[in-house]
Structure formats: C-alpha cells, structure tokens
Length: 157
Image (cartoon, rainbow, N blue to C red; front, top):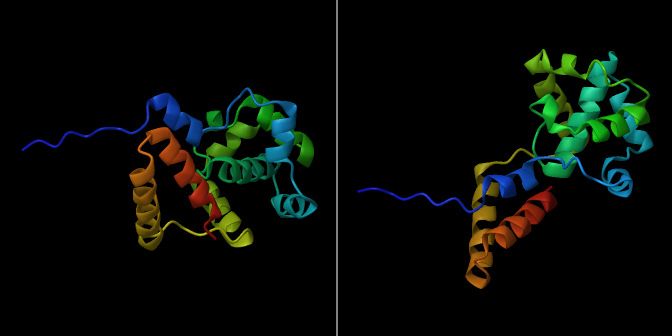
C-alpha cells in the first residue's frame, strides 16, 4: 500500500512563513525590528560585535518568523543593516557568528529564558493540531489554515 503525501503549501508559500522578506518598507522594518532599551541591554551583554549582531538578528528572526536563525542569508542585507545601526555595530563580520554553532544554540536558550519563550512540546503539538483541525472543518484553504495556525502559535506563552 502506498501513501500519497500532499503538501499543503508550495515552496514559495512556505518561505513566506520561514524567511524575512527583503522588500520590507522602512515602516515595516521599524514596526518589526526596532529594539526596546531593555532589548539593547540584553544584546549588549555579549562581548564581540558579531555576537551582539548575531544575537540581535536571532531575536528578530524569532520574533518575526518564529524560526531560529540558521544561515546568514536568513536576514536580508537591508534588515541586517537596520538591526546593526540600532546597536552601533558594523555588518562586515556577521559571517563570523555562524562559525560556532554552539553559540547560536546558547543564544537561543538565552532568548528563550530572557523573553519567556517556550519550547514546542508534544502538548502544544496536540493542541495546535486540534486547533487546525477545527479550522479546517470551516475552511479547507491551505494558506488560510496555515496563516491562522501560525498566528495561534505566536500567542502561545
């Protein structure tokens, strides 16, 4: 017996949920990537410029997409420059942040603790599956379901 797997979203649609778009307006960047004074304090606890920038980019990526920063290309150049200007660092050494994978994991854990983010557990998985199933009974349009489910996930504390 063969099971036919059907993907809900196209590759392009999936990227909408996992990447920061490069064509954001100045207003959108300000609304989504402006740090509070408290954010800057936390960011500045890191010694090297590339670690401060990496931590800040990691925080922005998590806030905007809900996904961790895994690759330098995850942050468009214009967004990276916007982030860097706020914390007074240059962008030229950003690639150094990706040389030590453990640093990114340590920063993820620090962000989770500092901002009270939760890890996605099997309990949340079941809850969101129930939520999405109920949505699907009303409207089976895949993109609509995913958008509403992602919004619901962002509300979990």
